[in-house]
Length: 268
Ligand SMILES: Nc1ncnc2c1ncn2[C@@H]1O[C@H](COP(=O)(O)OP(=O)(O)OP(=O)(O)O)[C@@H](O)[C@H]1O
Image 1 (tube, helix red, strand yellow):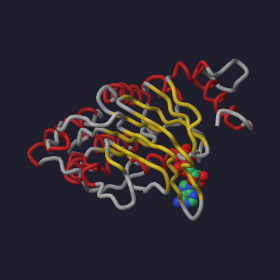
Image 2 (cartoon, helix red, strand yellow):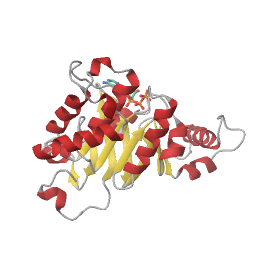
Image 3 (spheres, protein in one colour):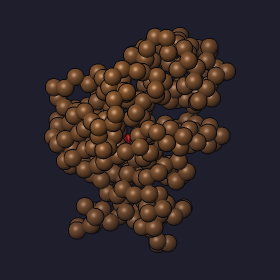
Image 4 (cartoon, helix red, strand yellow):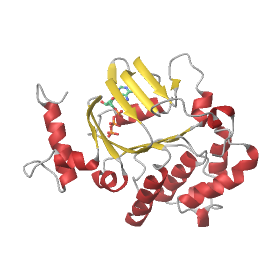
């Protein structure tokens, strides 16, 4: 761990890194984008799948404490997330890559990641090594002193991943991190996800079922703001059969579970 405050060194007093119960999150005036979610996630790499508009981004933003729960309970790292709570200590222990993120174009990659380390209150003396390690882990060491504006889209995303892991988070939230990565980088990134999932609760939203198969210990399938399925990639694949649409067993399992969830009296 890079941060060594009392909360970080205290023994873990919670069963799950993320625990949601009856969670509902309203966006706009009346849309419940998360609509009654019961979910427990521990250490591991959890692939968040679901069709467009399922509520994945809303859920990730809520876990990142950017959006507040409207109803129900959300507990992260043993801390209740609520309207009135001070989330500063919790945010120090979370890493978040939004779908779109801002940065100063004139910053170098190192400056950008350093800046985020500072926002995450990484102790000053630990920052240079933490930044170097994060930049190396995403394969950007040779670009560390290049300005952000000179990077390709895929490299910017890798810099985004570096800022999300610079504080060695206990919960890492990645919203479609593989968009724009070339095939070689995607393979490297899957390895990184597996490595991170050994001691971190990683939640990664994606549309790429192959990413889930390759990198995730379990799948969380979401539709219309609700949990449709949670299980291993193998269990998801087993839900499908040849008549379901998809180019792989996992895609057929995905289609089958979504189809069931739409039927009256289906799985939800
Ligand atoms: N600010 C908002 N105001 C009104 N509706 C919203 C708002 N933000 C999201 N929504 C709606 O909430 C639902 C969930 O959106 P969300 O972006 O969380 O889904 P998603 O699963 O991440 O989708 P995608 O896969 O397309 O990124 C969608 O129907 C979306 O149109």
